[in-house]
Image 1 (spheres, rainbow, N blue to C red):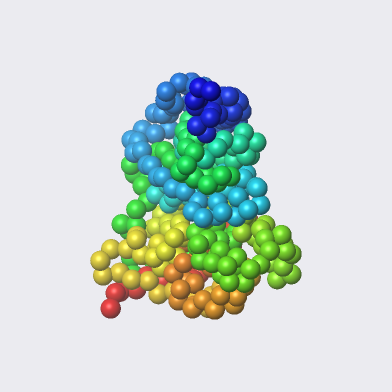
Image 2 (cartoon, helix red, strand yellow):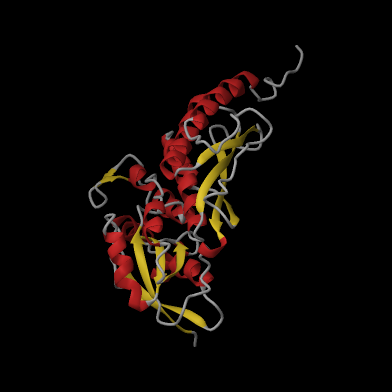
Length: 336
């Protein structure tokens, strides 16, 4: 019997079916700036030069880490697709940019068209919510490299900002206030530690309802990484805003100090907010040191705005108008 690509583990017919479904989902995210449909060797996007008169392109690439392991275990793939897009959107919006278009990389041992459609469907939902076009990507079937039923995932986003609207932390001053915005859970970071504690040590069931969480472990761990697009848009042009930090791997301090100049440091009031129960449970079940929790997880604060002290009321009022609560959680100090 002649050897074929399919007998080697690559199903071209399944790939063709998936490509058609993906093209349909991607098209649902298109706007007037997208110039070609999915299918060519590259995506085409026309920059609006009336809106961006002095444009700077802003890019980011990221993944969702071992949150994928939870998706595999529960055979639920839409939320990690949403997480991927929202994570990337938040990253570029910390710089003042608008998300323009998104591309994904999806690598799998053997293509499952139903799972792929769930996954890309989640990306399409988030792209529509964020006004971002999904204009292309790569689906790679690589038997022998990944375990059956598993895949890896990455996303690349391109945005734009006018040069006079860039936010880069260069205006941060001593005594600027840190304003924390709530997260929706772990977002996309700390899952290797969470899985070690919950699945290896405590051996919880992902389908088990947990009264303290008011949901199951699986639902809590697959909660969608929220997009802060609306919140950022409401304050990014206010003169008192000096920096924005997306709290991902490295925790609150590790991410926010990336904005500071030499001689500046952070003073965080760790008592100014309460940890959501999912973090408390992880610490209790694993006996994780508090400093390690702060270094690994967002602990309920997914975004930090830095603002001049005199402008805090203006910024919190703008956020309140869209139903967002900002908590003062610290300030910028002189490094010792």
